Amino acid sequence: MFKLVIIRHGESVWNEKNIFTGWIDAPLSEKGIKQAKKAGKLLKEKGFTFDLAFTSVLQRAYKTLDLILEEMNLNIPIERSWRLNERHYGNLQGLDKDETRNKYGEKQVEEWRRSYEIRPPAKLNEKQLEYPEIKEGLVPFTESLKDTETRLFPYWLRAIIPKIKEGKRIIISAHGNSIRSLIKNIEMLSGEQIAKVEIPIGVPLVYELDDNLRVLNKYSLE
Image 1 (cartoon, rainbow, N blue to C red):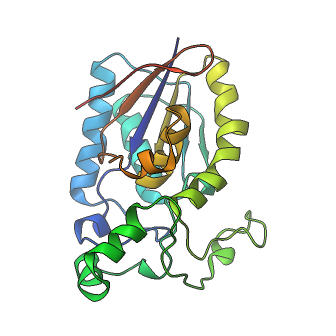
Image 2: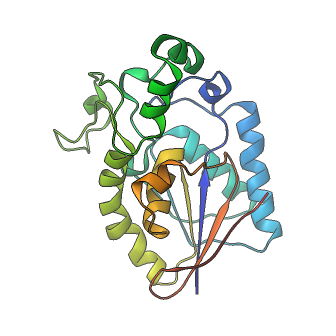
C-alpha cells in the first residue's frame, strides 16, 4: 500500500481579501502561516514522514510546504513545477470576487469558477518573462479546469507516479484547482463530478493506494 499526502496551501493575503488570484504570486497571510504550521504539527503527531515533495512555483504553495517540513524537522528533496500552479483565471485575476459577481451576475461567475470546460475571459500577460522554462505557446492567458488538468496530467504521469511506485513517501503542496486535477485522476471522477469537489485550505488529504494506484482509503487530518 502506498500513501500520498496532498495539501492546498494556507490562506494567502488575496484569499483573505476575497480576490481572484490564479497565477499572481500572492504571499501567505498570517492565518495561512498558522494553518501551514498546524498541518505540519498534525502530520508529525500522526507519525507521517516523507522522502520527497512536489509543489508549484507560486510562493503560497512552496512556503506552505517549507513551513510543514520545518515543523516536521524534515530536510528532503523538493521539486517545483509550474505545472502544479493554480488555474490561470485570465482577466478575473486581481478582481474582488463579490464585485465581479455584482458586475457579471452570480450564475456567470460560478460558471467561470466551477464548470469543467468554460474559461474566464482571457488576459494577455507577460508570464513568458517570468517562466523562461515554459515553451512558447504553452503560457496560458486563461484556463478552464480541463485546461489545468491537461497541463498537469503529463507531469503527474512522468514525475510523480513513478516515485510513488518506487515506494517514496510523497507530499504535494499545491492549489485548489491543480489539486482538483490530481484528485480527478486519482479517484477517476468525471469533469462534472470534480467541478463540485471543494478542497479545504491548509488541510492534509491522505490517500492510501494499492499497487495499481487505486484508492483503498482517503481521509483528511484536521
